[in-house]
Length: 318
Image (tube, rainbow, N blue to C red; front, top):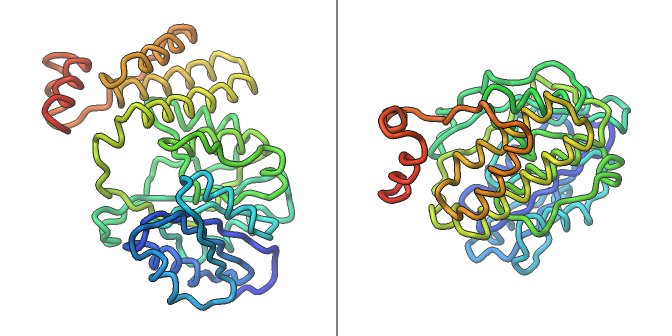
């Protein structure tokens, strides 16, 4: 086990995570890199999250309780309690490979202007045996704006999941923390802003994030007015940072495609918000992003077009 090196603070907000948090914490305890602390903020959970956390007695784990304030506020509070020079935000339902932190620390070296990224893949229905590594990764080291543009090109949606990144505290002190107004898609605005305050992103291929997918979320929660508005604000502001950083044809195209994917995802809910995205796309010169469709959705799209397809799915359930 590697005992030397800078202190890494893993900041973990938790809300009703009793079913999953033991596995998330366990993956930190299994790290080959020993100089870490785990700061957990239990954000007013009403399940057994607090009970589950009592089993962990490692002195490197610090647990704080607060009333429910939202994920962004809990993440900010965890950072406030942290002491490390390197910071990782991590959801309470994901896991990381044993050498994850060691590999990312190695890639950052002693730089305070470099962010480390990682490999990742999904597993479904709480079964790690379904894990599949995502092959569509940006594997080379790159400038932040190049990474962002590449991650949004050819109809792709940028993977901003917070645990992918190891971030020097010095960068976060410049970029600022999580926007507590946001709920849905809150990571896009934050991670984009943070990346653009770095000089380089360095890929750690042997660091692997196990991203839990298939957790049921109600359609009403995902398409509520506040949820869709949060998603739009996050995408609008995050992409605006990109345009401020580099106002070029390639950035315009990437931003337009990103917003078009938002339109595809949330249409026909809250047309007033959708219209704002469509207007922005028009100002940017339009988008060539294709409607993402497979199975019966692909068949419907070919027969009646994407708008009627989305209306049909909204009417009869997804």
